Amino acid sequence: MDFAVFGSQRELVEDMIDRNREALIASVSRLSDGDSRRRLVPSATTPIGLIKHAAAAERFWFQRFLGGRTESECDGPASPGASSYIVGDGDSLGDVVAEFRAASEQSRLIAADVDLTDTRLNSRGDTVSVGYVFLHMIEELARHAGHADILVEQISAGGDPPE
Image (tube, rainbow, N blue to C red):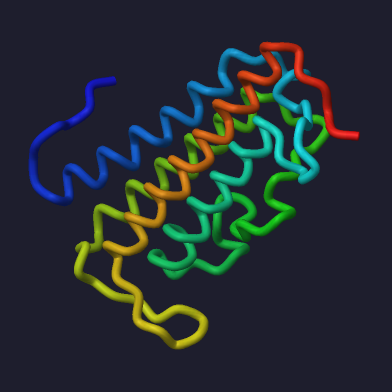
């Protein structure tokens, strides 16, 4: 995938979100289903769980917050809290990556209809700009791609789970 290095502010921001989406997927895609579920930290964070959580964050910020959908109108869970890292026993890594890709595509569709300077009220009544949402998602995805890189490195080196 080619990435933009120049263009409008909007093009650069959207491109950076897509770069970080792809970096997160690339980090975990070289793992087996079993290895993607390995827990090497005290929290419930696993490589596959990071993808599941990122899908929930996409839904929360784009489908719910920007798109105005209710949770039941979203294409999956839209609460990016601690439970969003939990992956069902029947979900393969491929399934969860496909879920994340679908949520990301919905985000792109919703984002196409808003301007970076548009605003929404959050649940506390604070005004939040669309630009902030985009920057927050860049931060969120980049952070989790880094987490995934570290976990994959530990798994590849034969890391042991926490006691």
